[in-house]
Length: 226
Length: 304
Image (cartoon, rainbow over all chains, first blue to last red):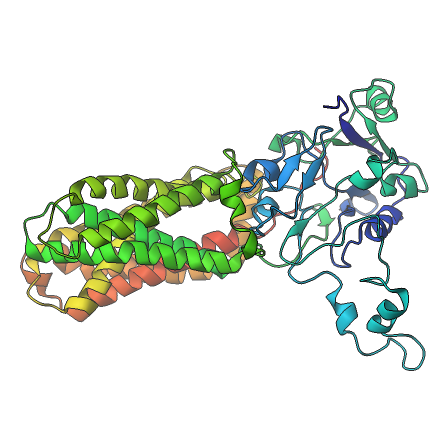
């Protein structure tokens, strides 16, 4: 039993809205193209010239009081000892109740086998210029062209979501979105350790969370909103 | 200018028409079970025959609904995980247990009805089936009501609405199947209490719908947004089919039966059957609007 409690702080003053985190997540976790484990809300308010623009990176909030975990009928969605909200595909029946229960829209369902289009794509993007999906797969010897063997490939009929790169945490590495952020806007670590970077950031700035009124107690915090 | 939010989430409804069929058929089954139990102590042979039909209708409809739900599951081969894992915080897990018990007991109850005069043990099983049926009916409402992320569902009125719909559609479904099975065959005045119960359940459904609308319309901002989103897409279906065809028209058709105590109140059997059919169509439409409309995403709330 560990006494770690992982969390993430996103510094909105540092975030430039480049979406590198979104792309990094896809490549690290073999995320299908139409799924967005790492995502963002774009918000515009006001009337010219008094307008306001917000770019809010989003991901699974790994809620302390996670409704997806509470509602899962097979315990496929569960909380780890470190506070991560994880998903066991071997238990998932694909009822999608977790998607309905999540107020943040960060859980995705594989209607079909992820990346199936690569196997079915018989026409190259440029005739006699580029390879087809199956040709790329045959050459690389991987199930999908941009496959990362460190992470699992999703399967048809089950849900999937951000897991804070749990496979990297096991090797004492940071989540790939944190590593990939060019502005160091994502601060990750153990919230139980008062000296950890996220604890320090939370101590120095008033944190906010998404949909606080839902009572889910998110573990992704936002500081320094404009 | 109001806030404009852009947020890409997975498109399309999460629960589609198959879940609607499950909730609808489950509701008809639950209502039929209750009708069978309510009529089982009657001395009137015509009512007993209706109870027999209802007792057979109950498990069949619940099973049909569950089969549709099964086809909706993404990973059907893992369904045994519902048994292998204990998830007491999950409403759906409890629903799985309750519906399993209802189907099992319902099949035994239907078996006990194969001889209409053999009452031995039927009352005991009837009590058990009645309790399970009410619990499953409540479960259908609680399943949606517990999802606080969906403002259209997450209120107590959803439970009230679910219960009222299973009462009306259950009675209508059992009556319709009974008339298909038996024809007119001499009932009539004996059935009047059933018609009255159907009419009352329709009125209760109207009240439940009005209660839901008022709760959402005068509720939180999120509730109002959810109601507006559902109304934009499904308002016509709810008002036209759910309320107009499914509640008001059947009540008008049943009115002579309620006012006159003679056989059918002067109505022909096809009119009674039509009223029942309309109740079923309206009940399905209302379930459809609730399930699909409740998933229309209101604007994602930003930093609070």
